[in-house]
Image 1 (cartoon, rainbow over the protein chains, first blue to last red):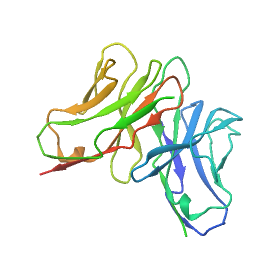
Image 2: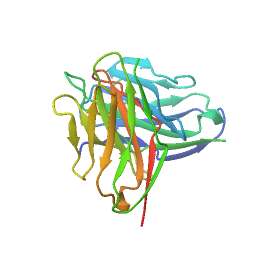
Image 3: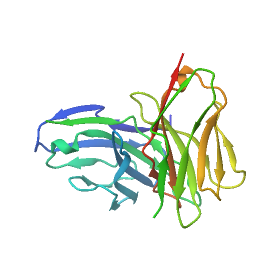
Image 4: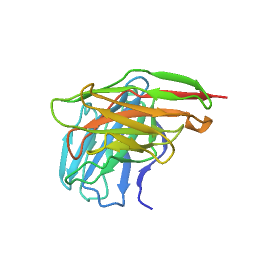
Length: 114
Length: 112
């Protein structure tokens, strides 16, 4: 089944404790992206990647890091989480080409930083 | 840069009534347009998309959207809603392959 898999689904952590949220896709998509969803603010892009070793900032990158060492994986790293990073996070992917086919999303990771 | 405005944050309707969720966009170049649906505790799923050609696009579950270039709109409609259509709906715009910009979402609540 074609899918984007995120782990974990739920995470509660303390301020300052480094964490990684994993994202993996099995569709050979070039483009991958991380979004955060907050009430009333819709989805805001954190980072994106056009291909292996190619990453760039989205609209709200502060406090986050990413890497793209393999085409299928795009982990999101919070090196020193703070309470304002409490949010619902989504990973998404799409193929690059002549057109835009829309995103395939993961099921989400609900992060609480206390 | 492109932007998306979803004109209604919440839309309550009764079951079997028609519904329209409104979406306007802004862009200086040609766009691709999308509607996504998010059911409770789930990720977003692509509902339908406009890439080119016919301005009326349809989903498999009875939703349709019409691209109106002059009004820069891409409203989502369904003639008769079901309880199971209760969800949050996101309009999105893209100017090419890759990044999409999302609206703030519209919560559709279908009441019995």
